[in-house]
Amino acid sequence: MNINPTWTDARIERLTELWRDGMSAGQIAKILGGVSRNAVIGKVHRLNLCHDVGHDSASKIRKRADDKKRAAKRDQIDRDRAMREERRKAAALGRAKKLAEIEARAVPPSPVVASIVRPAPLNLSLIDLGANDCRFPVSGEKASTLFCGHNVEHGGTYCTYHTRVAYIPREVRLSKKRAA
Ligand SMILES: [Zn+2]
Image (cartoon, rainbow, N blue to C red):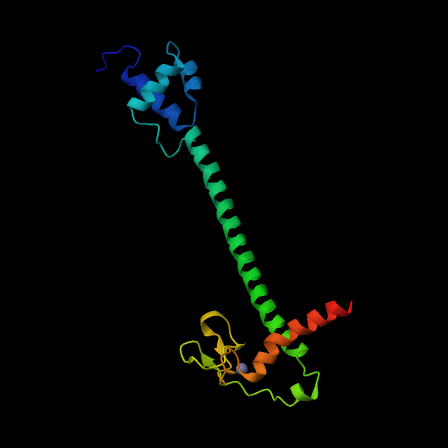
């Protein structure tokens, strides 16, 4: 028994049916008659029909749009991550190329320098490097970088050969500048 004449059991049943069919509150109010759209909304809430799975409520449509936006954002994040990884690889390759260029440019220009033979690197890791071992990186990068490891020139950072490699290009650059 319903004490409110607007919502007889029969009308509540009809309201529930129409709502499940996906009708809007306004449409239902017109069909039932004698009841406002707001009254229908209120009743739908009281009957707990608003979360009915069959009904495409505005909030559900909004949620779908949000899901789409979130998916697009995830795609963008994935693309950004891939791009950063590419840039990181390119940078690492660039560093290796630069070191190779420096070494190539250091081809001994004078008989004195020509007498210095490139030592076969001992390939020491950073942990194995002693205070008097050459710190010129010969392969790898970051934590896996391996170093020359030969005895350093007195008070220096590099062995005789790598001191040349590290400092000659600068001298060459400076002398070129002076010549220009
Ligand atoms: Zn060295």
